[in-house]
Each structure stands twice: as structure tokens, then as C-alpha cells.
Image (cartoon, rainbow over all chains, first blue to last red; front, side, top):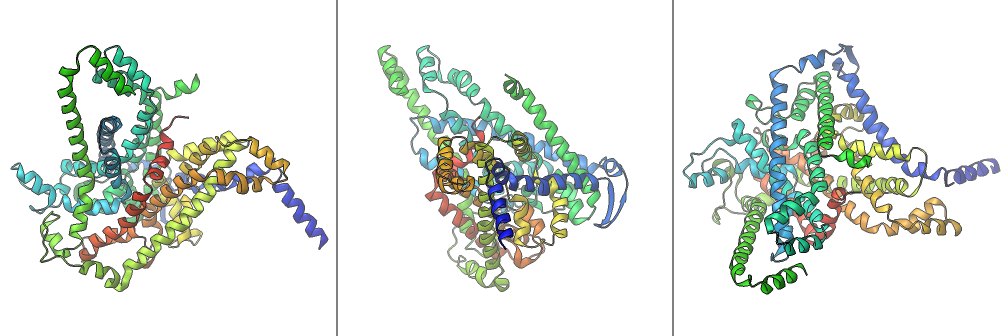
Length: 305
Length: 297
């Protein structure tokens, strides 16, 4: 008895010594990292080189799954995903910057209301937003979007079954949910710009447009880098929006992203090996894009200085 | 301040008379733009509310519209939520509430101690672990859903709350947030606590954790919002109908084969309602939590 007691006590003092305690604090992350990232990562690479009939019934097939990526479905998914990422970045950077500048203007009234209203869509789940936009972009002539275009004399269309309009519907859904969040990011960036800069520029006779180009935009650069990074991440891993509109299978792969394709192959067709090859390829693409983007924006140069 | 200076500057040079109308127009234009985008943001909520009182067949036939039709509007859809399909909606609601609470508690508790540990102590491997946090923030979890699915099956936690929570138990963004916050904690308190005979854990729980309260507020809200709305992983990890969360359950109602459109809109409305109410009372906390990532270190 006394033996175990002293053992227990020594274990306790060992665990709470300042040398060991830091490792106890970070242990949850180390475990989590190994179980939920390192193991699945290695496992997905392994799976991508196997033909999987069941989790315990596999054959090694080398790079065959990667060769199978050379098919029109995958290239279509890659195109859809890239176009989606491109459009969301093109819309969700300039627009929130402009709105943030408006909201940051001391003369603007009702700021609290506008900020709250613009942020509200971010509180909804993709599915709730998807339920609304699915019907708004419905095929009925009387539904919201067709009713609006009808006012301008445009014939009703089947928005979600054509390539271009389907992409438009995806970007609108994304803009609705994320506009407010990006405005918040840019507002926090704007508030960090010292007022003296604008005052000095005003004395030098700069107009509002010059101030925006020479002071506001350069000061927002770190926030812009951050937003582009999360947009690439979010754009290339997009699945939920597409799922909310079309579930998993669509005629002509409309709205099918890389992750939708992965989901379709893995969970509907149970072609786990091939689905893993899609996942590994996507990871490679995302990492590469982030690296290229951060290099172009001069992120690493700054770190080096 | 800036504006006063500008106005003073203008009046001194006599440009006041000329510029005023232009400035007023600019002000009105800005206001109008903000009104238009706020309408864009808010109108879907209004549509959903109106549609939730109409029969589902109406929605299928005419799509979504603004028409206020008292003759067909009833509370029947809401009644159906509680009685239809053996009250399955209530199961989803209960699951969402329990998973959100459980997941938020686990994620916040664990990421706080990790973030604190990374910020306060210097130890071998610290930078390596912090780099791992940053890398994990860059890896979309969707890529790993297949092996994670297999893992939950092997661990026999598929279709359980634990299975839903596992891949988000220590969310890297929260670790990052807590680390940034804990970097600003006064280190003298650490030494003071040691002199008073507190253990390292006593120092954390009794002295430091109370000081991290604002960070906890922000992360609790963000994490709860994330869990409540999360779709992709629960869609994979939850298999049976009565275990589903609200987003997963609602998505099962929109399949073209189902005939549950009556429940759809009312179900969607009730699922956003609690979050909107919490938001209205805690607007600042919601927004402060978001901005930490954008602020340069």
C-alpha cells in the first residue's frame, strides 16, 4: 500500500514538474494530430494505390488509380472547382472592400444595423441557405429569380440544369453566406490604418480615390492575402454548396466539384481506392496553389526579413 | 477629428460652397448601396418565413415568392414538425443541441490548454508543434473523409456522437486563437503562482484561465456556430435517421423522392432561429472572434 502511494505521488510530481507540464498541455493536440491527420493522411496514400473491394479485401495496383484520373468527369470537376474559386475570389474581395470602406466612413448612418444585417447570412447552415436558393433558382416561371428576370423580359430558365447559370447560382449562394464575414475582415483591417495618413493626404490635396488607391489598398494587403488564402482553401474543398443544390449525381456533372466527385466515388460507388487518389491529388493542388499565391504576394520575403 | 480638420481646411480655402452638394450626394449613394446589399442579405430570411406558413405543394408548383396569401397560410407545417414522421424533427433538434454542446465543450477545453501551453512555455519541439497547427489549418478535412470514415468504423464509433466529434476535437483555428491570446498574458503571474506553491495546472486553472475569459467567449460562440451548421462530416458519420443532426436531416428532406416539403421550410426556420437570437444579443463577440485570423502577427 505505502509503495503504491509513493509511486502515485512521484508520478504526480513528475507530471506537474515545469519540465513535463508543457508536454501535458500540448498532448491533446499531438494525439489529435497523429490520429486525425497523420494516420488518415498515410492511410489515404496507401488506399490510393489499392483496389478496395472491402476494408479487408484489397490488392495493390500501384499508380493505376492515378491513371484513371485522366477521364472527362475529373477534368470537368477540376474545371468547375477552379471556376468557382476564381469567381468567388473575384466577387468576394472587391465587393466587401467597397462595402467595408462605406461602413468605415464616419458620415455613414445606421452602421450597426448594416453590419448586423450583412453578417446575418453567415449564421445559417449551407443546407438552410441551399433550401432557399434551390427554390429561388427553381424552374417555375413564378419563382423568385425567374420572376425578377421576367420583369426585364427575359424568358424563364431552368437555372440549375445549365452550366453557366448553375455556376452563377453557386456563386450567389457563396456570396450571400460569406459577404458579411469578409466585410468584417476588411473592416478590422481598415480600423488598423492610422487616421493621420488620411489627414496628411488631405492636406496634400489628394482626393478620395487617390487616398483609396495609395493608402487604403496597400494597408489592406495582409488582410487580402488572408482572405485569398481561405478562399482558395474553401473554394477547392467546396462540396456542401453543391450538395445542397444537387445532392450527389447531376446530369452532365453540373455543379460537380472535386470533393463531390470524391464523395460520389467513395460513398456512392464504394470505389475507395480511386476516391483516395482524387483526395491526394486535391491536397497536392491546394498546397501548390497556396504556395504559389503566398510567394506571389511576397509573404515569404517578409518572413525572411 | 479627421473630418473636422478636412472641413476646416475646406472652409479656409473657400471650397465649402462648391463641394457640399457633391458630398451629400455621395453620402446618399453610399447609404443606398448599403440598403441594397442589406436587403440582399435579409430578404431570404423573410421569404423563408413566409413560405414556412404555406403548404409544401405550393412551393413545388410556384416556387418561392413574396405573395402574402392569408387564405392558404397556416401553422400546420409547424404542427407537423412535432408530430410528422414520429417526431423525427425533434430527434434531429435534440441531436443538434447535444452534439453542439458536447463538441463545443471538448473543442474549447482542449484547444485552450494546447494554445496556452504553446504560448506560455518554452520547450523542445514547441515550434514543430506550432508548425503542425498551421499546416493542419491549410489541409481541408474533406480530403481525409474516407480514411476518417474507415477509422470511425474500426473504432466502432460510427453513428455515434463521439464519431461526429473526433475529427474536430482539437480544432487548429481555436488552438491558434488561444495561443495568440495567451501570448499577451502577464508572465509574472506564472512565477508568482509558483512561489505560492501552485502546480503548473493550478496556475492555469486558477490564475490564467479566468484571464482568458474574452477568448473563451469568442471561441465558444464560433465553435458552437460551426457545430450547429456543420454538414459534411456528420453526413458521413451519422447513418441512422434518428441520430441525424438538423442540417443532415433537412438535407434528407430535399431528395427528389421524398414528399416532405411541408416540413422543409418550417424546419429550416426553426433551425436558424436560436442562432439569430444569440447573435442579436452578442454581436460584438461573434465579430471579434472572427477577426483574430486576419490580424497579422
